[in-house]
Length: 391
Image (cartoon, rainbow, N blue to C red):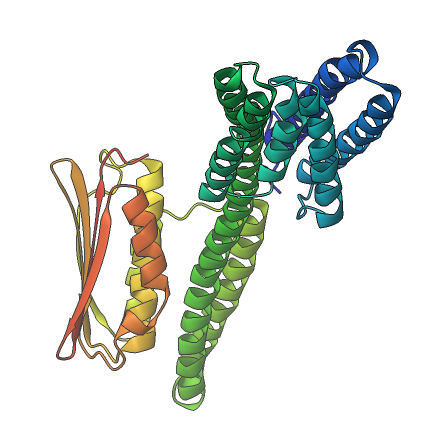
């Protein structure tokens, strides 16, 4: 994982732990406090007979224990599916406690424990399933109270129908709201971790592309000059020795640039690559025609670096994919855009098969430029444009 100056991913992880702890204590504490204060308080002071207190107390204990464990499972570092045994135990405890309270005319209080268990169970569902459960439970909660009220003849059937139904919806909202915030925070944290990992992979791809540019270019030229020196060994030993000295210099340059790349100091420039292309193409007996404006006129260092990479790739393609007799290099600044065009004849294998051009096209596009290439007959042409002030 990447580390920034403010330890962003680490700080996010610590914040997520704190948010989880806060959410757990908020939901669990509120559920337990409401059950104990309202249901437990009625069992102690409501004038219920001993058998009702004993039965209700046991049901309350089971409901509280099940709710705490279910909150813990849902808000864990790795959320798990609902344990069906505890969910069934919580539902049974809430049903018994609610039945005891409803039997003594508590038309509003009886639905509290079932509403909490319904909200806890809905936590393990997603989207539409949560609303179906809450809607069905709310409709079901509107039935028992009016039935008991009608049987008792006390006239409280309207309150007995509406309050429990509303209580189920309100309890579900208070449980699922903080849970939704917790889930969003978890997804954001995972997205930031993924962003950091992608940044590392992008940097590795950039490094691999630069290493390919260095090694591929130098090795291609070394192979060319070695072949030339081998042919000149008997006909012109002096020139063959000079070519081998050039091979040695190129190998040393490749080693130096590779070390500089690893250390992060290497910076290819357009002027260096145009000068290098002139020497290399001439050594390959290719007639190189240069129509080049000053490369430093208004073009930023980053722009010179990007176009230098294009020039290097184009030179490598001329050597690798053609038997060129002539190559043309044109560089001009037209208004606010720098334009580099490289063309050659004698194409044997179209460079579209190489991955270097596609990588460079993406890098130029990110800087506001573009890179295009086309092949017609035995000619291949590459054109790159870049804003003069590209950052």
